[in-house]
Amino acid sequence: MIRVLIVDDSAFMRKALSIMLEGDPEVEVVGTARDGLEAIEKVRELKPDIVTLDVEMPRMDGLTALRRIMREHPVPVIMVSSLTQEGAQATIEALEAGAVDFIPKQHSYVSIEISRIRAELLEKIKTIARTRPLLTRRRSAAPDAEALPAFRFREARAIAIGVSTGGPRALQQVIPTLPADLPVPVLIVQHMPPHFTRSLAERLNSLSPLTVVEAEEGMPLEPGRVFLAPGGRHLVLERRNGQVPVIRTPVEPATLHRPSVDVMFQSVCQIFGGKVLAVVMTGMGRDGLEGARLIKQHGGKVITQDEATCVVYGMPRAVAEAGLSDAVLPLEQIGPFLARSLGCAPVARSVSP
Image 1 (cartoon, one colour):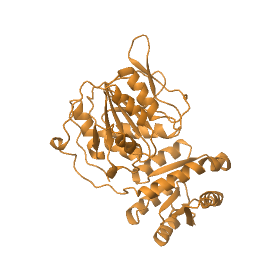
Image 2: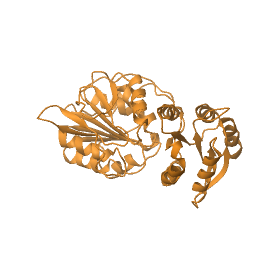
Image 3: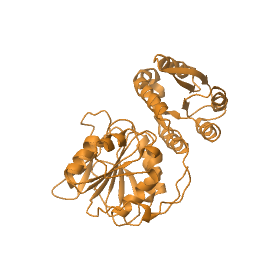
Image 4: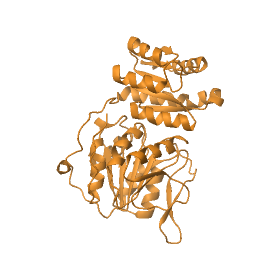
């Protein structure tokens, strides 16, 4: 049984989440808490396998409680985040502080949203509990350039990155190590709903030598810029009148994930053929597998994150087990590896916990 602690200041949400989870034979709700202070006490007392944690609560908010929990009694935490700009910013902070994932809720339609998020929440709880994610990261110097695998791909025209669960924290380890003189654009699909991707882009931009933006319809694809797919829309490229590729953000095709890593990989491959350096990082599921296969068929290169540094070793596992990985790397080596593959010096920085 997976033992879950539910933390929310709303009695309705506590009850609704309890009913939702207890309907599954693999999950047991071992307790509930009304605020951050009570959450810390219950984590210490009940030792749950996983915690769902609201952000906005009286006495002690979810962010403060999360930091205490991760410092004193580390346990996988899924944030329950409101679909507002403030909620999105707080969620990004929570993911930085050690939360492994989040589920969005719309306060004004909470009774409807409960039924919609049940399957997603149960999948996340089961996957995260089974994978036992690494909750703390060691602080270490940037990897020795000489220790990185020998790899050159200077003909690459784009870097394409796909990531899901654990992605915001992982991206904050990779993107800031890419130098300002990077000769290619970087395209990222992070599985997230609307609102949250803009906050993530702003956070990455504040940490990086490169300019990081949430992709918008009609943006020209430019070297040395990072384009993050907007939540709820795909990130695809098209060449107009033979000119520089421009970004499109359609809602079609209908896919399990929107944005989809496969859709983005396939589009980048259509524009640049085999001159694509693809990266598949932490996340549950198999999104990115077919796109990576297409990139490899055209002569491109594919890198996957190793199991030891993934929060969830799902997406990279699918690619690696299909024999599509040209390199399997720990998280802290991915950014420097990408920079050196393109003939650039990576930005030296410590690996944050």
